[in-house]
Amino acid sequence: MPEGHTIHRAARDHRRAFSGQKLSVTSPQGRFSEGASLLDSEFCETVEAFGKHLLYRFKSSRALHVHLGLFGRLRKQSLPLKPPKGAVRVRLASKKHFVDINGPTICEVLDQSGVNALLNRIGPDVLRADANPEISFQKIRRSSLPIGRLIMDQSIMAGIGNIYRTEILWRQAIHPEIPGKAITRQTFDRIWADSVYLLAIGMKRNAIVTVDAQIHSKKRSGEKYNIFGRVSCPKCDGAVRHLEINKRRAFVCDRCQPLPNRIK
DNA sequence: TTGATTGTTACCGG
DNA sequence: TCCGGTAACAATCA
Image (cartoon, rainbow, N blue to C red; front, top):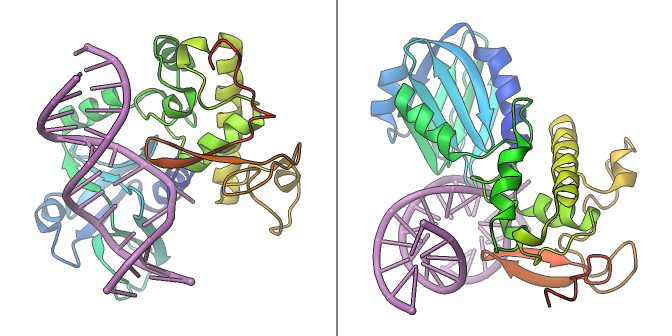
């Protein structure tokens, strides 16, 4: 489910619902009982997203750190409380709302030093106003790994997931197998700008939409992706090649995203 | 029951 | 140190 836009959207929503309030923190399945008891009846100061990581920050300076991984889900609802659906690890509740967290790969309580350690290993987040893209570029230009891999590496730049990776590189006509060190500053700036643009749209729409015609239309119908999962390129009608980067599926139009000769 | 899925980390070996 | 490969883990749905 989640790429960065999902988590940032949840952070904004949950911040409105929970910040400045005393929360009840429970563990319906009992799989997070210890952590829940540490946070129960604490005041929530704010809820923040860093890339795909979500932090509920409490007055005690402890934080609930959640990462949804591939399958995790957040469900926010209005009171009254309803029976948990599926495997709910944690339930956070205020006087008006509650959130159920299902299937996170990370769900833990961090103290201040734990939060600092986490933030230190996450790269600049394309959805944060305080992000410094220069840091991402410096890492990319020193790497010989393919750009398709680098932009999804959360320690290099945070927020991009598997679908956005393919779509951003296609939109910018950049072959995913070009090594990072062959990416110019100008090219990197286009990747960064399009990432910011697309993830912000994703936040607004609560969906990944990367096709310009769909971005500008209010209708929900039609293809949401340009080449992700598709067989032909909407621009040149050529075949879309299916490849694997990092054991995740990726797509490329070799005609619209040429690989420079010196790299082949 | 099987397979696929918008993710990450740990560990090993070259 | 860097990089590839592999396994492990998470929950749900078709």
